[in-house]
Length: 179
Image 1 (cartoon, rainbow, N blue to C red):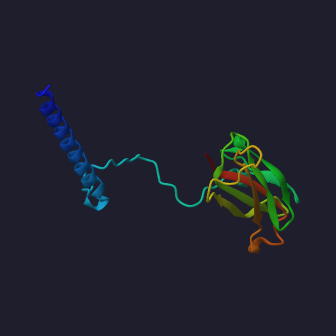
Image 2 (tube, helix red, strand yellow):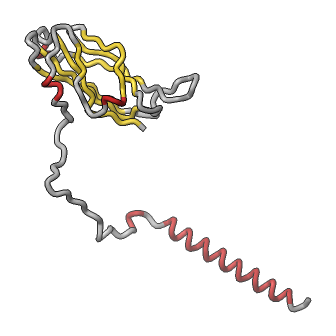
């Protein structure tokens, strides 16, 4: 019995040294800042031959293919058409407006861009304007169900230089990002 006391004392002392050493190493690691970290010397660089980087805002060629009649609002084909519907689409000669509702899933809209093409009486494109939405938080939530509200109201005004000449419009969606 007398022999077990020194063994227990030695074991406790060794455990205490191990804990103290672990704490010291942890404090040293936590005190290290990113400025002290050496810069990477073998960072991965990816190149894709023949692929040019995007420049400018996204466009929809389908806007130029439409020929809406005066007073009409068309919907230009885009890459996300199966993921949304547009409610209350209207054109009053000064702006096109409506509400884009995501139908593909139940998640918050993070980014949305709508292009409005404006046409003269002959159905030719005379210009365009954009509506851009960037979520600043998780977005509105339905108070009953707690699910994200996926309807984004929009309004795209006829550019000043087209006022009086724009008699019809179309909209298309080149950007739609949701969770």
